[in-house]
Image (cartoon, rainbow, N blue to C red; front, side, top):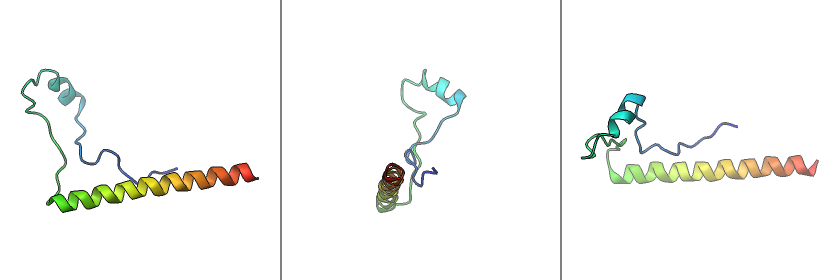
Amino acid sequence: MKKHYISNKLFAEPSFIEGGARLLDFGNTLQEYNASETDAETDIESLKNDWRAIGDDIKISIERYEQLAR
């Protein structure tokens, strides 16, 4: 089943090289986040993703229930 939400949207996904460089980044200068224009926009996107995750969980539960009811 395809997930409709993104669990790590606010965090950038580093490449293998960036991950290795972070081992030596004692000043935490390589830390990077996916930013939105405003805090409200970030909150809205987070809430949307939360509700999409809830919807996916409900859909999975209904499908499993229907399989067991057969």
